[in-house]
Image (cartoon, rainbow, N blue to C red; front, side, top):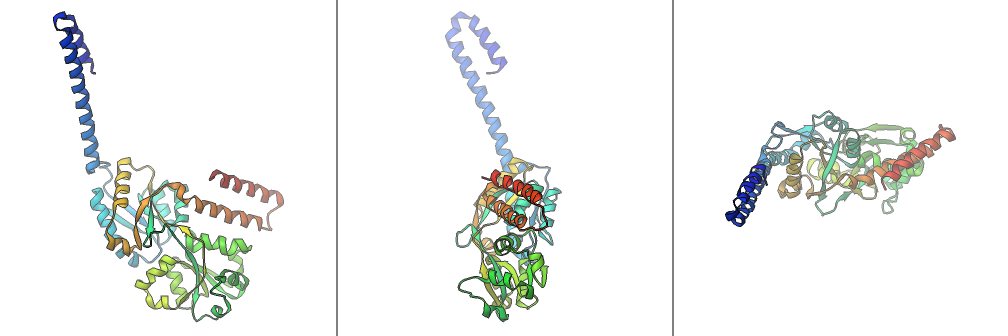
Length: 355
């Protein structure tokens, strides 16, 4: 009840003949004031939710990691960004960097407000660029995961030396690395670098930097696939989602590719916004993606939809990164016993903090 209402009640109480009725009136007046206040607050909330929130943010830059060339990515993403623009009441422009680091650094500099990442690039962005995951992609089959692959050309002689049914191409690659050329895609890629680095190399005590006759970073999943199809390298990394994309973008190249190793399942990709964005803008973005049901656009991205997510959903990737680092330290013959133990203790502390 307001001060004015209290004073009015005091004066009414002085009039004994109206004591009971006045007290009832005071209570009623207070209720009216409280109800009016609630209505104003509700109206203000409604206006904010209606699109005037964060009016100083005139447009949104949406970062898109370079899994393919920008020419291939734009037809997939621009329809989604157009729908997002309409939903949140301001233009949303695609930021197509030439490498994964460009999106991470763009968010860190405040140029990019929201982005599509892979797991490894996301944990880098969360650590360095104020990124916060809020939704996770769902595959066309309804799963929230995908797989890393090692691939080679079907005509490459190594195909005849690998037991494809056993899927032990990883062992063959390490054992015969001195005679092979190899391509990762990007050092911030999950399926194109982190996962094979751990499962293929670190677990076998091998350092990919030292064992191949030639090692290159091709830049994107599309580039590694094309390099293999054209016999520019013997073996390269890729993933099941991008190979499926080749059915549309480069079917002739796909026909030449043989998978020789498949990883354990990897958590699917996050979308993340900067932590310091206004809550109302974060909410409008999250509502848009969780409710988005344009099947044609989603299928072009090879998604069936998106689900709510949080940062901890990618702790598996953080654990994988730490496990890779632990194995590399253990196998590093250039470290003294003391330095090795110090590094191992530091990494184990990081691992414990995730549990």
